[in-house]
Structure formats: C-alpha cells, structure tokens
Length: 338
Image 1 (cartoon, rainbow, N blue to C red):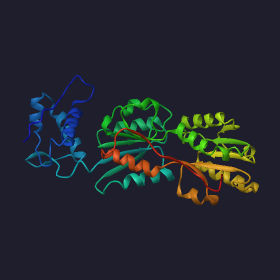
Image 2: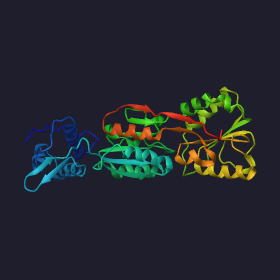
Image 3: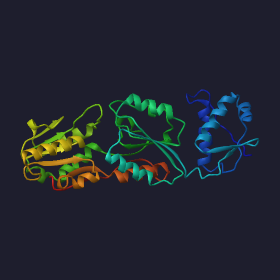
Image 4: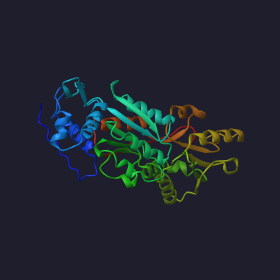
C-alpha cells in the first residue's frame, strides 16, 4: 500500500471530504497512483487526520461514482483497473435544444468512446435553474461543460466547481474571464468582421435591420448588437434593431439579419405572400448554420460559428489535449438570399 500524504486544511471553505477526493484525483492524474494500488482504509484516514468516518466515506463514495476507485469485499479500496484517464463522466449543460446544438452535441459525443458517460441538461436561460443544476451535480462528474447564455451573473455557482474541471462553450461572459478553459464565440468581432467583408453587397440595400425576437426563451448576446451597430455606424449605413418582423415593417430593398429560426420562417412566409424574391426584392441573412438553411427557399445566407469544430475543441479540452480560451472559427456563408 502506497503512503498517501493528504493535504487537509480545515480552515479552507472547501469541505474536508472534497479535499480528500481532490487529492486522490490529482494523484491519479499525475500517475502517482496506478490501477490496482490499494488506498488507506477509512478508519486509517479518519484516525490519522482526526476526521469523522462519514467524511472519508463520502469522499470514497464519490470517487467510486466517478469510476476512479472500486472496493473489494473484505480487502478495501483500490484504484480502478479501467483507464480512468481516458474514460470520463461529463455534465453537459446547454441553454435549450435546437438544430445547431444537435450538431455541437454530435461532434462532441463522437470524440469519445462508448465508455464515456455524457449527461445533458438544459437551463432555458433561467439563471436560477442553471445554479440549481450546478449545485445539485457538483462532485458527481469528472468534467463540467457549461453554456452560460444567461441574463445574469453565474460566477458564484460556477465557482463552486473545481476550476480545472470546467469548460465553457459558446459564450465567455466578461465576469468569467479567469483561468477557466473555454471555446467561445467573439460575438462583437465575429458579426462586425463578417459584415465588413461583405460591405459592398450590403450597401446595395436601402437599410439593414437586425431582428432579435428576444423573449424569456431566447438569449441574445450584447456583443451582437454592439458589433452590428459599430459596423453600420462606421460605413454610414441606415439601420435598425427590431424585436419582431411584421407585415408593417417588412420593406422592399432592405436587408434583414434574423437571429431566431422561428422568426426566419415567419418572415419567409410574409415575403412569399408579397410575391417578392430573395436577393431581388429583399435580402435575408440568418444566424447559425443548420442543414435546413442550405435548402430552405433556395438557400439562406448564414452568419455562423463552426459548431462542429466547437464540439471537437471542447472534447479535446476535456481530454487535456488543449488548454486556454479559444475563439471558435466564424464564417459567412453566401447563398441565394442575399
């Protein structure tokens, strides 16, 4: 049995059972403990560090749930024989289900084998639900992959999780720009530069409208508004930010950049009723690429991050192949609607 010198500090805010668990995880990750190595008994750890047996039991139980240790009747606790470095239990927290989230999920899922357990949750832009899910699941997973699209500050709840186990995806709020790993969209820069690359084509329209359709089931990053406004101001383009497109404000020879897919379909119906043709009478650009948009109405032009690449990068961060904060690739896809 290897001698393990636990670093336990009762003055810290971190619970004692979690300090034990974290210590053992770090020993395993560093290779100081190998599959088959026996751990000190619950009584030995409790006696040596003057802890309640329940504290040690909870630490060992959580490590068993994570697959890091196993127990043998009458013999004690051992480091699992499975390759625990390669097999993970992942908490994946999305905002809501959508076509491009499915692309992101499939890309992420495909980077792991069948022994990896990925459990998906949704917060629906509700910060209270986000915080509740994080609290209830801390300590139960090897990694936490979070999409913090929220109208509120989630720093406190995310701070409950071990920093090395958290990966942020799609959004990196200003209040979370710490050492957390992240693969994110640069919302301001992405829309600004994509529109700038197409400024001559955009200028053929009388005005440009950004339709956001915000409601409690939709989160629109503020960087999108600011990047759009900065572009239009720099190139002196008449523009508006509107909440919803209706027959009353759908104008010929104007360009509409549409954030919500439901709003996109409603707008296409209005255009059809008017007998207009895309690219001739009116321009449409949508956010977020999906297979449907390649075919819809002859092809819809799209501003989109590369969700497939985002999934792959997040998976590599879980595996420890990539660290840091990485801006995800962003593309403008020009089709017959613009």
